[in-house]
Length: 124
Image 1 (cartoon, rainbow, N blue to C red):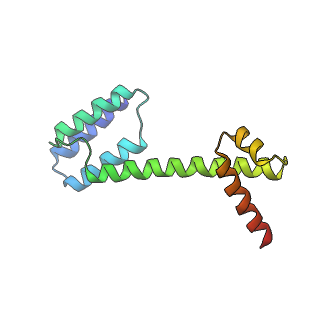
Image 2 (cartoon, rainbow, N blue to C red):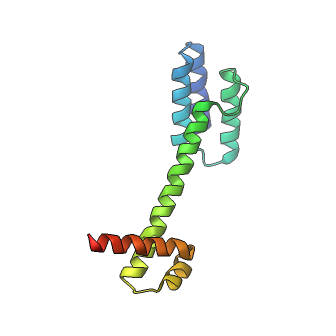
């Protein structure tokens, strides 16, 4: 159902000769915000998109930047979550640096950095 909708929309945009920039923007929205449950459908849709808009490259600059930004956001979110967990272990439970590192599954250096930041905040 979703595959049919995305494919139909793609074909209609191309038939009506919308500017490539608008088609790319819409396809990026569909690609990054309206996900298929099945990865195979994502691959098939990508291939169909390339055929319809007559692109041979698998990832253009715009897509590359969106992909990098998405991955960076995920990494930053994971790091923030780890920092919050370590802070809670240190402040609320009185864990040692070694205990916090083991419990949060992070490097000891990361815990020491968080502890240092906490000390700076408390001194302010």
